[in-house]
Length: 219
Ligand SMILES: Cc1cc2nc3c(=O)[nH]c(=O)nc-3n(C[C@H](O)[C@H](O)[C@H](O)COP(=O)(O)O)c2cc1C
Image (tube, rainbow, N blue to C red; front, side, top):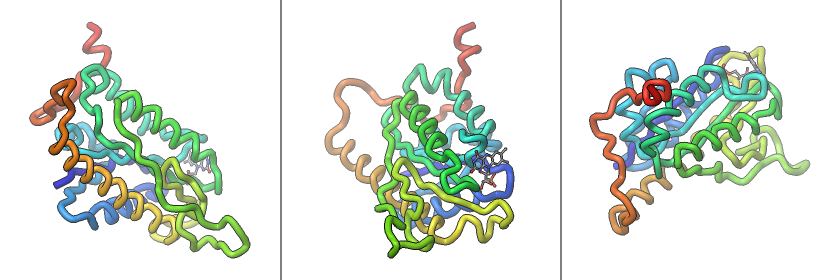
C-alpha cells in the first residue's frame, strides 16, 4: 500500500484541477495505491491525510510567473511544526503546473515547489518522460511536448474551458508523472522495510492534526 496526496490550487478556469485529476488517474494505476486529491482550500480538514501520505504531489497554476497566492499560503502553513519537527522528512514530493504561455515562466513555479519540498526535507521526483517536439518530426501531440523535467508542465489556452485545455498530450504527461511518482514511493516503502533508517526514529504521523504555525511556536 502506498498513500499519495495531490494538493493543488486552481482559481481561474479549473485547468490545474483538470490536470490534478490526470495525475491522480496515473497514480491509481499503481496496484495498492490510495490516492487523495485535495484543493488547498480543503487542506485544513485533511491534515492527517497529508501527514500520513508517502508522497505529496503539488499542483499550482502559474500566476505572474509564480505559484499562486493560495498555494503559497498553504506552503507557509508548514513553516512551523512540520518544518521544525521534520514531520515530512523523506516523503516524496513532485509537482505540476499549468500556464497560458508556452513558457509562461512555469519553471519558476516548479522551482519554488522544489525549494519548498527541500525545506521540508522531502525527496523530489522529477518528471521522467523524455521531452517531445524537439524537431520538425515533433508535434503538440507529443508526450512532454514542453520538454520540462522538474515536473509536469502543461499549457492551456486562456479562451478554452478546462475540459479541452490543457490538451490531451499534457494530460497524458501528467498521468505518467502521477504513476511514476507513485511507483517510486512504493519502491521506497519496500526498501525502508528491508533497510530502515538507523540514525533516528521516523516521525509518527498517525493522529496528527493541524500543525502549529511559526507564530504559535515562537510565542
Ligand atoms: C492572476 C493570473 C496570473 C497569471 N499569470 C500567468 C503567467 O505569469 N504566465 C502565463 O503563461 N499565464 C498566466 N496566467 C494564466 C494561467 O496560468 C492559466 O490560465 C492557467 O491555466 C490557469 O489555471 P487555473 O484555471 O487552474 O487557475 C495567469 C492567470 C491569472 C488568473
